Length: 346
Image 1 (spheres, helix red, strand yellow):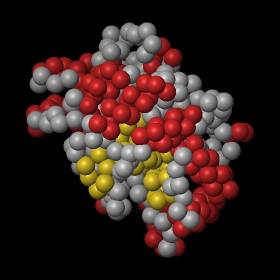
Image 2 (cartoon, helix red, strand yellow):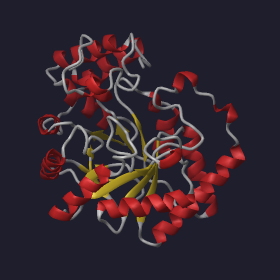
Image 3 (tube, rainbow, N blue to C red):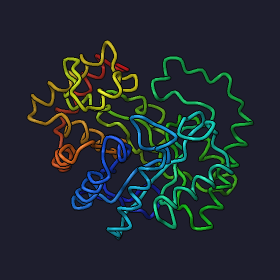
């Protein structure tokens, strides 16, 4: 497994990050251990979690169980170089009492709770799951309206969180602050305030990114390249659409779509036509569509690390077989042609 230095930090992580959001619901603790063992044996030393996990469904009663499973695995295996990223839940989530927004007080409480569940003294990367002011992610881009935002309130909030992060870093409870589901304005504003006020610089950005979801490719990609902010790409297989298992608009039993019929708004009238285009490219060049989709993210102009997620050990085993696949230039050209014909399909 290829390793790389993560942004401006001294963290050296695997190119693939293992996502864990199904640990505790679709993936039992026993199978989660098997996945974690398999990933470690393959050279993966990077895990992504969140206080609101597991998902499918997200519930207050189960929030934090994924972190607890990871904590028990780490306590039993004692991996030497494992890097763990987790997140504080954004405003309005039913995984947090009363849907409380992110604040310095709640952030400190959330860090303490995550540390306890992870059985750790320090969280390597602590991410804001989504901004309090709202987001165009999660299929909200079609109706996104930032006109109600209050710039001064937003800046005060950012300074509050950066100051809290500085205290937590000084106390040894987190190593780095990071963002998720952010915009180009948000990212550059966080960076500007950190620089001007002498506060911690965010390390990474975790946004959705795949062959079917390429909003990152313009302003955010430019910002990340120039600011040395790696992208942690979640849903690089578009919630399973790019595996081909839903091709023809079918729903296999025990699949994610069986629990979430529209896959979080990704199943639209145009999506299967685009999926067919990408499946055809994989077939033409003798590639498995899973391996093609993941390796495409690894070759983007902005440093990108796909967060791979698997419900079963068998799925993870198949994903890992493609870690060394190299895409020919002709594959990238064909992919771009499909994207130009069918952009923004969900």
